[in-house]
Length: 281
Ligand SMILES: NC(=O)c1ccc[n+]([C@@H]2O[C@H](COP(=O)([O-])OP(=O)(O)OC[C@H]3O[C@@H](n4cnc5c(N)ncnc54)[C@H](OP(=O)(O)O)[C@@H]3O)[C@@H](O)[C@H]2O)c1
Image 1 (tube, rainbow, N blue to C red):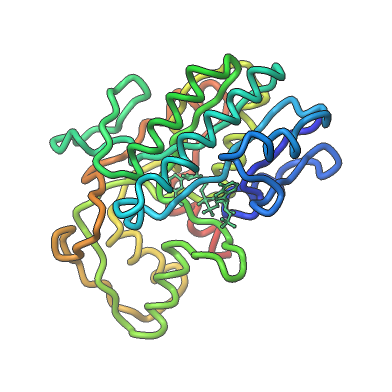
Image 2 (tube, rainbow, N blue to C red; image 1 turned 180 degrees about the vertical axis):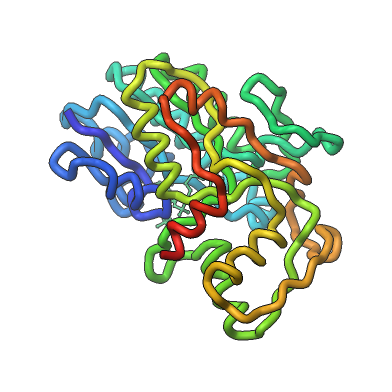
């Protein structure tokens, strides 16, 4: 009775695949399944005895989504809805990954968000991901929805990379980078998140969870730590969100309280600096 990993070619999907028994895992990359198409879902999953579907596929282009919100919606809302429908019809568990970008509307926030706090996205990407959460939670009785943040995992060749790889490339090339220092969050290693997911799904504690590394930082401090740990001789110049001028709004504070997950899965969660060291090594 296998686990199906959807988005198996992405950062998280690759780590999930590495953490599961290959004989009991169906790894589905984008070429194997289109999650916005029910016929493609049926062709990939029907008749294979799948008991757990982990959806690590997503439309992750936060800025581009402002210009093409429908494209984000199709993958981040319609896709999870169809997967949740498949799970409900097949008595399977639906595991879905969401984001800290479901928050942001509360601009005065300064303490970690719990699962019981009201979401309030401020971007087309955040809205599409929140809709995906709602569809899964209201459709698949056996569900785990996990919100994570600032994910970095070993990117596929030719993929879009991640913040750590971008900093290393820019730092080595230019010797200095300008990085936003007024957004507070918790970068999370995809390997750690995969471990959290695989521990949680061994339980029957279905529901909504926050799942990041522990601690909090800014992108500026994260970049400094990447250079310090990697021995890269580069300067990090702090700039404001306004100076950076990204197309999409981002939460000024989106630190997530992960104590519910730690208790349910019986795990301790590593500090973001320790997780970074694991990734860089
Ligand atoms: N990256 C972050 O910083 C971050 C932060 C918070 C939450 N998250 C969430 O964490 C999860 C994993 O993110 P990630 O960084 O591992 O993503 P990723 O590296 O971008 O991987 C996503 C994968 O999904 C595939 N995919 C895209 N559209 C698809 C579709 N319509 N049908 C089937 N497959 C499709 C992509 O294939 P192609 O590339 O071939 O299209 C890609 O391999 C996502 O739910 C994401 O929203 C990520």
